[in-house]
Image 1: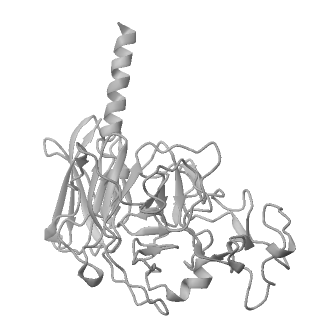
Image 2 (image 1 turned 135 degrees about the vertical axis):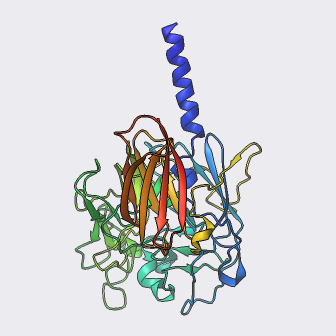
Image 3 (image 1 turned 60 degrees about the horizontal axis):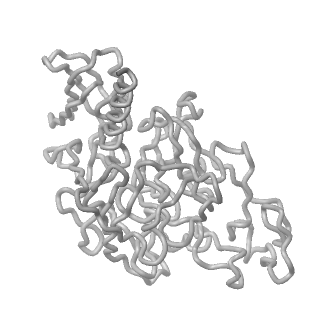
Amino acid sequence: MKKLLFLLLTSSLQLLTSTAQTPEITSWILNTSGETGYNNIASNVQSVHYTTTDVYVSATCIPGYDIGPWTGNPNTPANQNFVFKITRNPQENTGTKTATGLGHIGVWSNGVSIFNAKDAFSYNNQGIWNQDALPNEGASFDDCLGHPAPNGEYHHHVNPTCLYDDQNSSAHSPIIGYAFDGFPIYGAYGYANSDGSGGIVRMETGYRLRSITDRTTLADGTVLTAGQYGPAINTTYPLGKYIEDYEYVQGLGHLDEYNGRVCVTPEYPGGTYAYFVTVDEDLIPVYPYTVGKYYYGTVQSGNTGPGGGHNTIPGGATEYVNTTGINAELGIKNAELVVFPNPTEGIINLSFASGFAVQQLTLNVTDAKGVLLIQKQIAATNQAIDLSIFPKGLYLLNLVSSEGETFTQRVVKK
């Protein structure tokens, strides 16, 4: 009987985990009011559906912020009608890692495509010395550091500076996207230590420019033949023009060769593998920018390759309805607040979207009887609210702006 009860409890827990509205479901910037972006195309994410195994993100690939112009780039952003599929159970790929190829390798939280560091060109078209997009195409990036591909696919190779507050070095950056292996991508700041301790620091890459005087070898020690040599290092072809000019050094920064690490984050207090965008102290993007040359995890089919990103939402999938967004009375374009996890075992995280106009808020937490338990002033930045000292039950989280506008969310403590 005890064994049967244990199995039943285990099955129930697995079902709860698989159907809960977890970060891969709730981290998207949903367009719930018909907002449009470039060329009057619907912006951000149009819908999110989920099953027990996958999340389906429908998006135009047009952000809610202003984009353009693109100096020297003749392409025009167009509606891509994407449906990206993100696994809800990402796993480390313990075999041969999958390369992050050309085209989209993930999707930002506003439905815009993530590209890797390459710009699709290589020296002598051999695919050995591959051009780095930032020094080779950076002049065509707009103020948000994005630009359109020939097919009209607007994308970012580097830190999407208009998507979140990349100058906020006092709080852990929010989830700003997911790679196609299902692992989250965070902004530039995280906990100093992977266990969540040590305060907030800028995540530093483990890559650096190689100390080479010619391009006759690769970073892994491969000695090339004369026909495979790269161009001489000079003012026309400086170090950094090609991604093969970089080498990974174990322990140099916070991140591994895939530009991520296993760590605690606000959304994953039990730990997860997570990628981080990398910038320097002046917020200038630093190689490899987002995800490295290879994915850390196993990549599903359906998102990459010819026609990738046009998955079919299965019948019976549940549509996520964002009931935690700041209500319309606040009148803030594209503003969003995500409250998670809910239910919680103690910690409730508040994640404010980039562009949130209200700076100061009064936070009130009451129990189901209306008794005020917490009241304090907070800034509209990522926050962690600790309910662990209170008993399990229903609580009301209320935010009030200086103008008296309010937002209320029910929270269940398990």
